[in-house]
Image (cartoon, rainbow, N blue to C red):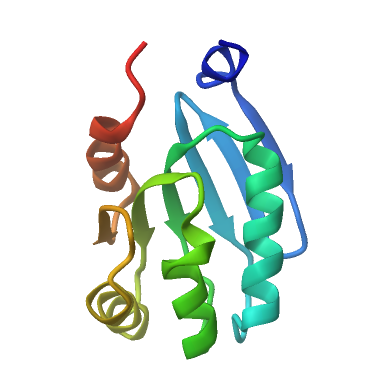
Length: 135
């Protein structure tokens, strides 16, 4: 019961690589400027996210607009083991390069949860609403 009661709380945390914000049952992760997202950084981000979530699963907005490149190992990890406690993934991109990278991620890595690429945050949040836990 305690986990469910925490579902709609609002809180935030900034780490070396992301700013996390839990708001209205959706977890927002805004990646900080990063030249290359490698496996080591991906594992750190996932570990900090899981700790922040305190065992509760959420639909997630991943804003990767400021990540220039990611390694195959990092993408594979994020699509599989790194997907713990993620009900659905809305991936925010802006540049053609990031859009191609995100499409490639979704098509090739086949994440274990529903995943879509978006270019605007409002559309991403509207899509994630259907994956929120009902109260």
